[in-house]
Amino acid sequence: MPEAGQTNVDPPAGGSGIRFNPQHFKTTPGIIKIVEVCIGLLCLILASPAYFSGTGFFLFAVVISFLSTIVWIFVYLLSIREALPQIPVQWVLTELINTCILTILYAIGTLVQLIVWLSHGARWYGFGANIAGGVFGIFNTLVYAAGAYLLFVEYRQP
Image 1 (cartoon, rainbow, N blue to C red):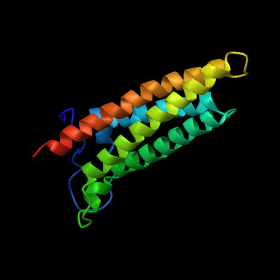
Image 2 (image 1 turned 135 degrees about the vertical axis):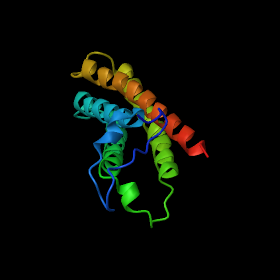
Image 3 (image 1 turned 180 degrees about the vertical axis):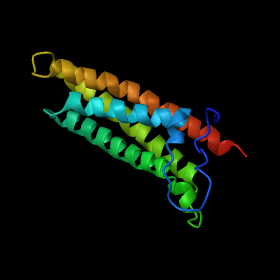
Image 4 (image 1 turned 90 degrees about the vertical axis):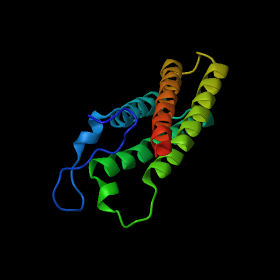
């Protein structure tokens, strides 16, 4: 089994091209991606619809993060990194930058969500669900930060 910081699990041997590789999701980085998507979906459910513009920004951050993470899941699930060796992309650095940006976006969105709903008080319909969405946003910010840390460790390895 790969180390905790290792995001690349070798695809099945034989040939080249796109291959189905579910083994990545048995590693810590793969599990983190699944957790990010699950908590993101929960945030979407709890904070929808957006009654205030702050919730609109929170949902924007959640949707952008959700879609970006889905793309990375497919990159690993279909072994696209290994299928395109001729493309000069530093995959780990690209994912690290993406994850850092998403972590910051999630943190700002979560703060805005909690500030907006706490300032309007419990008299609004959906107060509890939106606060819960913000709390899960805090959890997902921490999960994205953990993913960014693991990517940083992998990037710094020789």
